[in-house]
Image 1 (tube, helix red, strand yellow):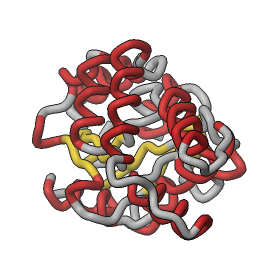
Image 2 (cartoon, one colour):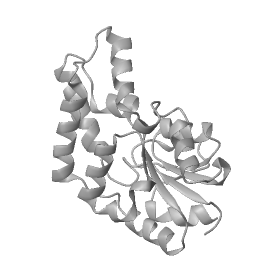
Image 3 (cartoon, one colour):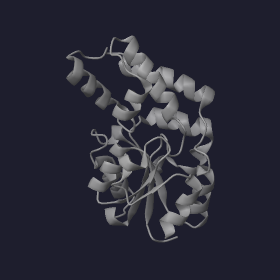
Image 4 (cartoon, helix red, strand yellow):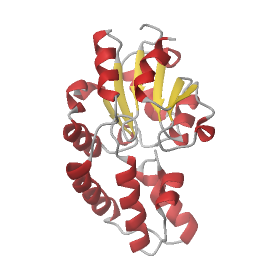
Length: 216
């Protein structure tokens, strides 16, 4: 498998099955703060986004800022749920093992904080596939998806040209970021309708099919 020099994985919803947990918590917390939000609203508006997008969207819609401790409280609730219930996305361990065996370089680039990424990787046991030098967060670049900054940063740090990279994403924001970075993007349609991921190079519904797509 040498079609690409680097495969860049999103974390939430691609490596770890965290989106249902975190979006349920986010919807409940925003509603609790007086910003009525359903689970479906949270998935539509915030899935794949860095936390600053939540602040910006709430302020734009309501004219009110979220509390100063919002990030701390939200992440505390998410981490507690992760440690109790988080599992890897079905089949992704086999995909990573195969890439490793075939010596195809891969890394992780997530809108989540470095702490969130590490809690998720440790809880699910996927941390063994990712060294510190192959974990990138929107915290590293300041602007999260749909801006291309994070993917371009990861590629630059690992010395790979954007056109030689493939991104694996599951959200419209992530797909938009990869397209803006000039990278091929493979969209995992687990929680998002395939139609909303139509700008991707390819859309797939079963993680085990990814290795064939990457080498096609």
